[in-house]
Amino acid sequence: MTSSSSDSQPSPSLSHRAMTGVMWTYAATGARLVLQIGLTAILARVLGPEPFGIVGMGIAVIGIAGFVVDQGLTAALIQRPTLTDEQIRTAFTRLVVASIAAATLGVLAAGWIAAFYREPALREPMMALSLTLIPNALSSVSVALLRRQFRIRAVQLVALSSYATAYGAVALPMALLGAGLWSLVAASLVHFTIAAIVYYALTRHPARLRRGGSGGLSRFGTRAASAGMLSWFVESFPGMMVGRAFGAATAGTYNAAMNLARTPATALSTGGLEMLFTSSARAEQSLVFRQRAFKVSTGLVALVSLPAFATLALVPETIVIVLYGPKWTGAMPLLPQLALAMPALMFAGVASALLASM
Image (cartoon, rainbow, N blue to C red; front, side, top):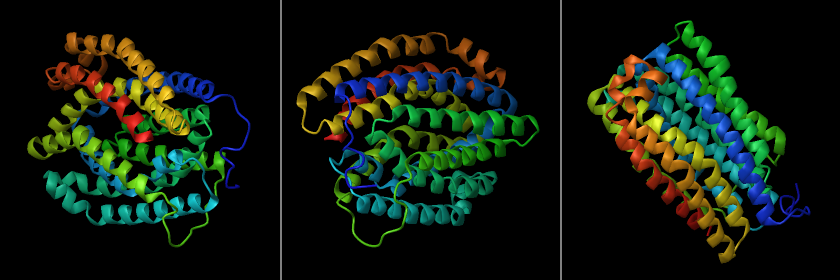
């Protein structure tokens, strides 16, 4: 790959590429939303709250570790106006080293993490979940390069197919055969591993490790990582405290209500915000483009999200019983409050994506 390989090819206008990317993003995200809700509903009925609570405890820890491992490098690779092979190798090297170190620490500290939650059954799943940090980090450079090139269709199709394989072909059969929480753990490992392999096959970026230097990525990357960790604290820290205070079953119920509210929010916003960040970063200093993007994005969020979350808030009993079954009735009183909070979170996300790109 040459120093300008991601930007030198003739392409349509930025606005056209951004709009095409948004269309693919929401098409694939809509399909994943249906798939995720369907598979989660089936798994929830088979497994019940406690396995979801235990795995959710581990995933919350993995979430903050993921921001530390990434160091904001994914965002920095997208944001830079030009990119060299040396910078790609530098980012890849730092991600490899950090992910292996974090995974090792997670395995060694699994007993302490289980003790923090007062949940002995978390120890072995925590060790396994820590390993997901490695393939997730390895895919980061590939995803960043694909997004730089506006190959959004490829990014979304890989995300959709790897999720369907992991949870449809691995987790569901394992759950039906009595594997319990290990069906969810195995699905996480399979999901990230498949995605990492396919993403790299699509980019074949320089993967030889490189010593020394930051490649000019650290300054922006550090700020992006700090913002990501703050977001994690707002969204995930309360769930950690619920798990520690009330145990796995209550944590599973809380996570069920949060996921019912957050899954549509994530589906409607995350892909679009990634596209918004990418296109805004590529626009460099175009204030007009950012103003237009902000207006269009907030309008779409309001048009689509407000009716959806109002429905969740008005009929929580019906939604919980139809999707998850009677084992999950504890999620009913939580769902309206969480659903009504999601639009504000999405509006804030639009603004943060634009600010981050600058």
